[in-house]
Length: 119
Image: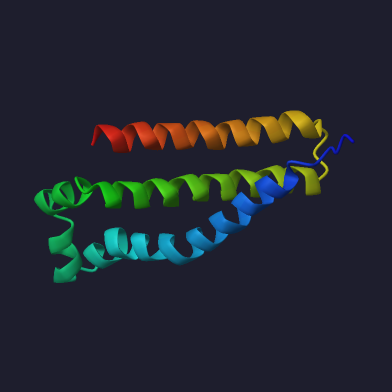
């Protein structure tokens, strides 16, 4: 018995998990790294000093957390872009768009892994 399944469920699961992670973590990261220091709040401005960030990013758990957030956010974004192109009826074949979108997400994930590894 040969059962052929679709890989679409895998991509949709990465999309949904990436959406949840992006919605919960990214706003906090943006506020803590951009908005808070920009407003001059001492807690955030002190936390953004080079020595503190260097020490924080030296922790392997922090690197793993950043990697997960970046990777899942990339898969969420490129899956959304792929389906946006499809929903707008852009006259391009579906398979190359899907392959390119997931390839870009994978490349971005690999680049994030390399950058975090070298830190």
